[in-house]
Length: 257
Image 1 (cartoon, rainbow, N blue to C red):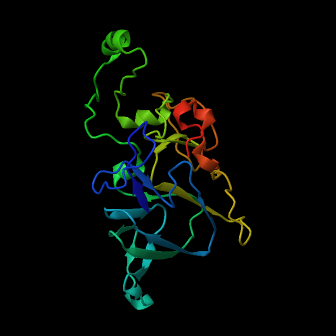
Image 2 (image 1 turned 30 degrees about the horizontal axis):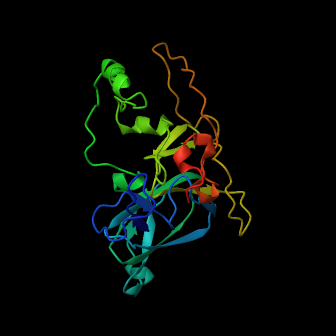
Image 3 (image 1 turned 120 degrees about the horizontal axis):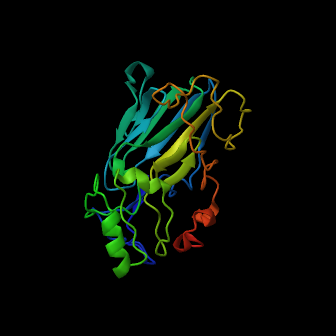
């Protein structure tokens, strides 16, 4: 786990910054331009984490409980391991977790600090939740034609937006899953547990195909299914060397490594 301070539009990170970072990474990569974790159903899994940042990270795994098998003091005897679903990794520390992947599906693996699963975060953004911004947007357009109002339902709406960015920065959240925008960035990836993976096959198997009648869906007042807008499909950025994202139409992100 690493962190960087990149002011949007600049060419170099702030290497002496100690408290205020805005890019959070696994293996120096950010979601969705990050590897997934393909796992065979029933395999025993060990994930080792080293924290190179200046803050602790509570790392959380969906769908499974794990045992803490390694601390900086060494390997933990099985009789002394303790069960967890979230493990806080201190500054400068290494931890390892172990578990049996016995639940097929796609499971989020991420830091539980919300701003560590976003990028290029600012700290002085006004709260516009619930505000009707139509009139404000029209007035603002005269002074700043390229400006865009924040969403009225919270920052999750940012996952559906696509807008030009300055050079050498990243969108706050992005990535698309089988049900629409995932609304994550930074320290986030997906563990994909499958029964049909061959030993040693670590290719991305794609999104999990849910068995029939196992996915909830919206109905109207009469009980009829509501037709959902189809997802854009795939997972843009999951296999993007250099974090180029041409399909997101963000000029500032093209060819900026």
